[in-house]
Image (cartoon, rainbow, N blue to C red; front, side, top):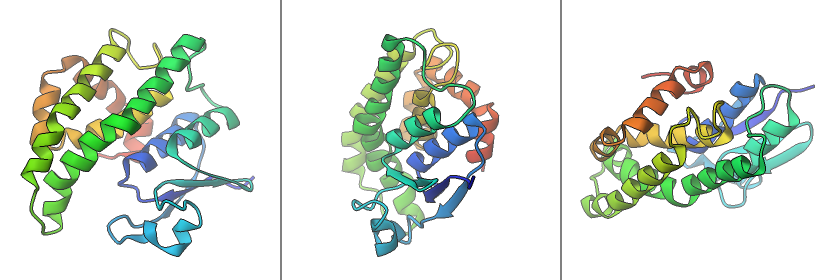
Length: 212
């Protein structure tokens, strides 16, 4: 059977979440690069995979999907390997809740409105929109406060073992921590910092998100 194909830029948080899921399941895959900076996600080839021009897109055995959370759930259910969803309805709902928080609140505040203007825009020769960053900081702080609460004293968002929620949160916090604002906010959250250390020690993270 052919390997799954992930279409997207390896720097994308959502591409990373999908690839982390494949690594945790022990599923070899092919990454077909779609250049984010070059705007290739808005070209016809990728728009045929996702009409909104977002990434990643996913293909396996004649089935195609987009939307990272849907892809991640498919991978967990379609392939052998350790389960990435807890066993009880309440725990599974909590994992899905955290994933939804990432997509609806965490990513916009942390990536769209802090990391991109603070780090990416200057790296491309532009200037940071300080008002944009300042306005997003309270939302990023709320995001961290809530996922810290939801993690609680557990090792992972799925309890004792890694879940899809962990794989969705980590890429966002990794980029957020690369900004002065995120570094300061995370310094006040030692529970989340310890969780990040546990995650960064995993073989899947080292394969998909190698240290610079």
